[in-house]
Length: 343
Image 1 (cartoon, rainbow, N blue to C red):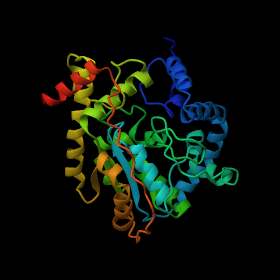
Image 2 (image 1 turned 120 degrees about the vertical axis):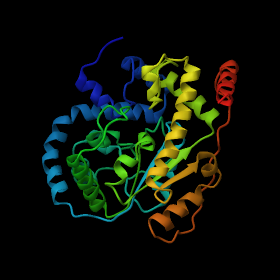
Image 3 (image 1 turned 90 degrees about the horizontal axis):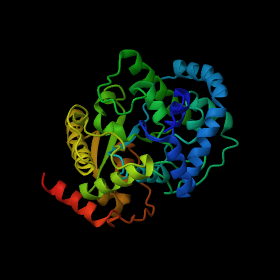
């Protein structure tokens, strides 16, 4: 396994899960997938490295925007949930059908100057229609939605699996200035997505008082299956977790990967309920992925009317298919089912 320089690893973290292993193996798997969104993410990563000096130069003006930004009252909707629980689909649907702004893929090329870069280059960025095409949360086109985890790293830290990080007063002020500036620039509510906030939404809820959280849950068996597939496709190894897992495993004897992924699923279920208790059900909605797919228009209408205070304009939001296909070897799938049923 080849070790990459820290600067290059940090750049790659804009596009792939943190703590990934074997980056060259990952690149081969992305290319082999042939998925357009995966290939676009790799291209964007390279472009981001090349344009880093320009990004840093634009950052000087960007910081002035933050300091001058007046307080705004535009709502912020943050879609959260365990990885592979349907958060990308929900965020894309809300962005497509509601009058909102969002973090686009251009911000991944200019992570230190997202507002300034959009202001400078928006004339040359073709506004593509939001589609439901993605590869592990990565979308197509510079105008396509982006998780923008690199922006959240400013306040939550670059170790995205560290659940002990609390925001200090300066970080809280910086975060509030940024969101005031971003929503003020577009003069619209913001919809964004960050999977890891389902286990630490309460850390930012007190600062972003206009933020609402839509937290996705999914059938535990098929969530566990999807997480295992992600481990193999992203890390090339069933034993390397994809996304945040149960931190108690770090100090105990590691179980086999079936036990590990099941504990990851159950950990997220527990944390979701805990975060809702801390924040309150009014601001932290728990939404079933399966129910959303059956009636997506119901959630779009609810967000429009309750959070944005806007009458929902009737429009067709077609149901989505819910995948319940067994995609693992039968013996592995049965072990998942047995392990989850035992708890």
